[in-house]
Image (cartoon, rainbow, N blue to C red; front, side):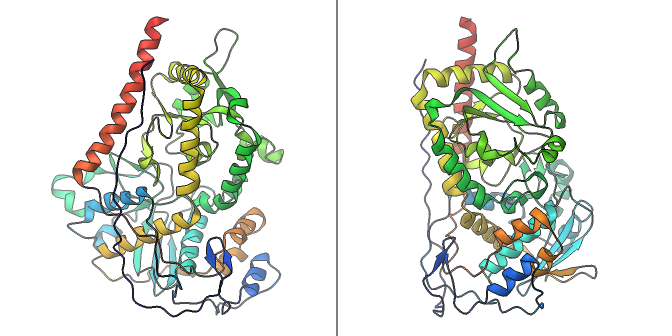
Length: 473
């Protein structure tokens, strides 16, 4: 076996954010990494979310962001992709016509005006994706009151991008529509935004990410990596995509063992049984876990990567807001989409023969997720993305006739059960006392090209190892 190594890619972060003086008004009690202000009345809002007390729409919540700590940490490296996602409008700006052109695709329009949110809904999304996406933006405005600029955007809530680049090339290149979405594709337009599950996925009993990430940490302590089942694990719905159906062919059988242990997830049965087999933190029991896309991008990537297991990443077509900065053989093991069974078998054999290296890859992937996807950074990513987007707008946002103002209190009152529970868990009860992290500068074109090429080179190296191995059999 050839020696392998991870590429070393150096990125320089520059402090570019200067702010004026702010009034000191917050005490020293720290919750969720932020400190609580004595001037904020939290109890009535919490009670209203529990349904035991009504509250008027007039809120005592601060409307001005006044941190007592003017220092700022550097944002994670993946924040650089904000510049890339908005680059297509860098020279033209974003006109109202560009926003309106996305209306036919959007599930909702969201307007932020003077620190308030207005929503005009066009069609129902799957489950309550739209509800929790809007909820997340509401919490951002509570974390940084008065700091998110006025803006107007369209949002698409499906697993695949909807607007193709080929339809806006040549003479149409200057009129590219702008739409926010959960994932991107090299052939599609769109602005990638954190998905709704960071605030919980009530329909599948998946807790908010802040809670779940802690559960993963505890789960990883229960079973040491070398004591885990030495096979590749996957559980999911294989009926949503041909690639997943093909993955099930890799399951162990009487005739062959591809080193994979694959399980079909029946969500209806799980719901009836109280999701007994669906606790994500209980699935960190194997040395290797498989990520594979479904109908499109899948929210499962962060859950799989958080397990300390070496993730076998079946080559994806889509990307979310953080995955582009992860590196093969450093954070995960790349698997070909065409030769899934063969590649999975080789990866597991390689890992079991190089346990220290396989464990290191699993640990590095999990560390990336736990450290770089803290909710503080998720909110900061949203803040910087929306701020940079707003700076490109060439028109003044306005409230459309069909829009409704939304509040955290009123949104939570309309829901029951897990939906309300997750909103109560993720409610931001007081503003941050620190500034958002400092954005890194855009990639230089040569640096970005070198980074992408290095990832492709590593993937090709793994493919050569696999080919050499199968020639020997």
